[in-house]
Length: 222
Image (cartoon, rainbow, N blue to C red):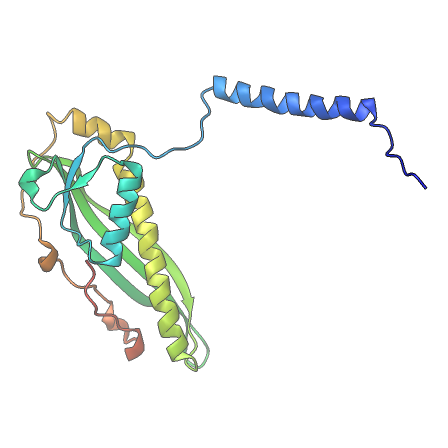
C-alpha cells in the first residue's frame, strides 16, 4: 500500500512566511530605533594597577571580567606604570541576627559584604572617590546542622562577592567614568596613600551579636 503525503496547504505556507517577514521587519525597526544587544563596554584606559591580589578568588575573577570587557587591558605591577589605579580600601563581611524563635534561638541570619574602593588616574586624581558597594543575603539557621551551614555560608559569601564584582565592573565601564577620566581638569586629588595588598584589613565581623563560633569568619579577604 502506497502512502502519499497530504499536499502543503497554500494558506498555511502563506501565513508562515508572513510571520517570518513580520519578525524580520520588527528586528529592522528596533535596529533603526537604536536598539542593540548589550555588549561589554571598554574601559577608558589600557594599563591598570590594582592592589587587589590576583591570587585571591575575588581578585582573579575581577581581572577576568575586566579583561572580558576590555580585551586590550593590561594589569601592571607598579602604580607609576598605570594609566589608572583601582584601589580597594576594604572588603568586609558582616553577619547579624535577623529573627529569633520563641525559645530564643536564632532562626535567620543576615549576611552582608561591603566593598569600598576608589579609582585614580595617573595624576592621583579621583576619577571615582571612595565608593562602597553592598550586597545582602538571608540565611536560615539550623542548630542541628551546623556543619552543613558552614558550607552553605561559605558558598553564599562567594556568591555575594561575585555579585559585588559584577557591580564593580558595571561601575567602572559606565559612561560617567569615561567622561571623568577624559575630562579630569576639575577632579579632586587623592589625599591619602592607598593600602598595599598586604595592608588590606581582614574581613570584619559584627561579633557583638555573639554568634556561634562556627559562624565567625576571620580569613583575610584580598
